[in-house]
Image (cartoon, rainbow, N blue to C red; front, side, top):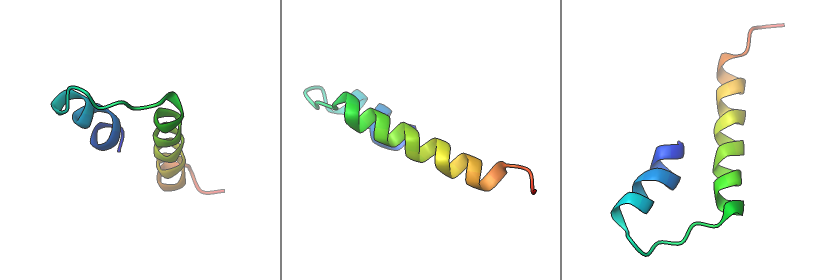
Length: 42
């Protein structure tokens, strides 16, 4: 998730500007998705 939105576009598009807010949103969504899929059952 992080590679698709934050890493690869910045690597391939030299003048692409990604704001800290966009990075934080991507990170938050990735963590939420990971925890939803892999947390141990209650």
